[in-house]
Amino acid sequence: MEEERTVEGLVEDMKPFVERLRHIYDLAVVAYTPLVDGICSRNATKNEVELMLDWLLMYAGDNRMLELYKRVCRAYWQVYPESIAFYIMVYRKEYDPESLIGTKYECLLYENEFE
Image (cartoon, rainbow, N blue to C red):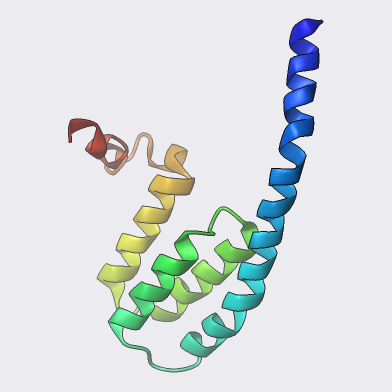
């Protein structure tokens, strides 16, 4: 019973933080959507594309931001394939590590353990 109250209390205490985080994601979607529209509608440099993906990656845990991330990747896959492949792998390592298990890329999950 004590453990239940503790968990319930923790969930209740977390609500304001979750709401603030949701608000931050909402603001990020509003701010980045026109930037993604712009970069996807022209021929951006490799540096611009990589910088955009760096920024978007910070918020890629939100499905709306992930869709923006994917739009940039799809728009530039054929133009900068090495960079896009790198950013897809970075996303998978950070937000979807289970997708790497059992693949030749599983070693990426452990690369920081030896530093």
